[in-house]
Every structure is written in C-alpha cells, then in structure tokens.
Length: 220
Image (tube, rainbow, N blue to C red; front, side, top):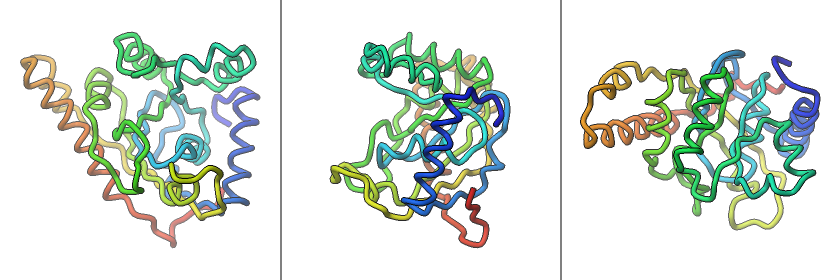
C-alpha cells in the first residue's frame, strides 16, 4: 500500500483481519482521506482500539502518538519507530512535542489527533480541548473529521478485555480553516486562544455530525 514499510503493513493487515472477523467492522468513505501529503485525522476517543481502527480503514500509513516512556524498552521502541509512532512527553503539550507533530505534518505524513484529549469515561462525546486548534492553525494541512462507533462498548474503560461488539469508522469531508489561519497571523494573544478553541469546537462539531450510513458501508 501507499508508502507502508513491511513492518507497518504486517500490523495493518493484522488489525484489518481482527476488526473484520472479531468486531465485524464497517468503514465509511475512506476515499475522503488523501493518499499522499500531510493530513490531520481528528477523531473522537472512546477506547484504545480507536487509533488502529482509524488507521486500518485507510490505505496509507498513519502516524500515531504514544508516551515517550514506551520507547525506552528496546524491542517495543524499535517496533513503534517502524510504525511511525510519534513520542510525546507525559502531558503531550510541550513545545518539543508540538514541533514533532508539526514536522511530521510538514513532511507529508498523516497523523491521528483526538480533540477530546482523552478517552471518554461514559461513552458520550466530550468537549474539545484547544490543543488541536493550535496544531491546525500552525500547520497548513487539511483536517479530516473521523468518528468511531462501538469501540466504547467493545473495549471502553470499564472493560478488562475487548469483547466482540460491532464497530464502525466514518471519515468526513476535509475541513477548511484558511480564514482562521490568516487571521491568526496578526491576532492578539487573547484572540489566538479564542481561535484555537474555535477551531477545536468546529472540528468536534463536524465529528458529531457524522453518522453511519449502512447503504454506503465498505467491508475492506
């Protein structure tokens, strides 16, 4: 597939097989994700299954985020690097972490970000945090809203082991933030904070509007 090394490809095939036969997944509109160039995939977050679910639905490599401490174990660190995982510090909001994410985007990579910041505790969508707005404003790549369904029931915080519950992932149409990016170039510090939150809220609203359409589902 497009730009995948063989180690990433093996993981991609493994998760697609798992999602198809154990979770009976559905995929909606993967063609909305560009097959090349930098892009932000902004998804709701309900489970540890969300990152591989979003990545397995598209035929290009995706950069994931993970705690920097995971890279300290040689075998795991080696595997994460081959999968293109982005290491972040504990809070993920440092200048260094932001620079790594932006560098990946500017280099033409796709990266998954979660506007909510953390997994939901109750299965419902949560308010967006401003962090994703900052990243979007400081980059010039398109933003594709993504919504996952069923992952909380399959492997939410309340479960110790994934159960075979049907899941789905739907990719929305790319969002345009050109006007806000232009305004941000000359905005005051106070207005910048408002812009970051506005972008985050608009992304979360786009995610909320995504609903599965059974007649257009694909089974990759």
